[in-house]
Length: 490
Image (cartoon, rainbow, N blue to C red; front, side):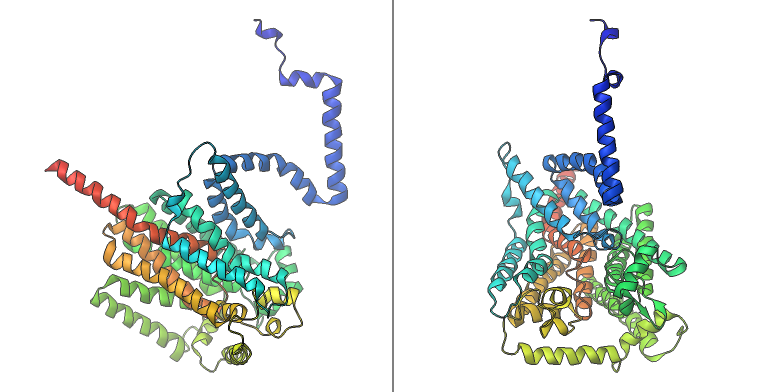
């Protein structure tokens, strides 16, 4: 066959009909962009990439886990630049991953037993309670229930089995840590840009539309980076500082990785400080206490207690560095007479009276932004909760709060028990120590701010929980391999 007589794709452009088709498509795209805006134009350009990604996701559903990890850092910040319900992207990715597994099951058996775990059971019980809340007679809006229920229970219930199935190896934990570290570092860099150079026009518009009420205090900007708000940014960066600081302590062999962990930890601590979020200081405080307990080392425990006492004295009983706005604001967290604290206590007292006869709460979505959006006339919508746990109490009642706390403490105690008594491999123990201490810190901070169920903290917590439950299997496998090597040597 003469290759010179072959017809190639470019040869079709010499014919009038293909050229006319291409021109028509180009003119249509240009017209849509001109009339409907640049967003439509961008969607048209990205459509082929989206189709390729969708195909890859259906073939390799694990891609969806990595996407959610990355996207969770930017999902709220994106709304400042392009108005859309970006949170529904997470819902879509989770659904697509389950569809992928469903269709793959026709060709290859899916080992669903991998998802069999106490954690999966606990997530299912919590989801079941959330579903029952739709019938709560106190609930005013079922639409509010749908939107709020996703962050409270649905994401946790859907992603935990997927993690056990698709993201369950030690290399996955390494990838998780690297993604977390890099994106948190970017978060601090973005925060520094806001601090030293000011916000961009889109962020300024967000501030002008109401964000300034909570983010410009006494003429100073509370840094929020690309997170939902300064509270979430501060707590998330504090979380990062705890986890990566502990990872740096346990990393002995890989110097480059140790340096990376140290840089990320310092950047996280700095990001927490510039956020101006007082409640975020609870993350390193409680994370540090948890670390001292898990180490089971009396000298280290004493040294940590002395250091913690020094930090407390610095903030509560001195005025050192008070010319720094961030430190000055952090210092108010140690003042029992702080006006903001008194307002919170007064709100909790009002909620206590209201909820005394409502053991199942006022219905999921009754408080916070969802309450203001869907039921702005109600008591709960107009009473600030200022806390993740207080919001759970108001939405789901004292029964829901006790159930939620039981689940969280069960996971936390499991992590602590694994570290203290089950795990033998130093690096596996170090990683699970970091995740357990980070979880303790976020739980403490969630009393002062509603950080637990927000992006990216919620997703980071769920992934960390799964790794806590997987770690004994990894450790057992490592010990068996070490015993084989030892036996082979002897």
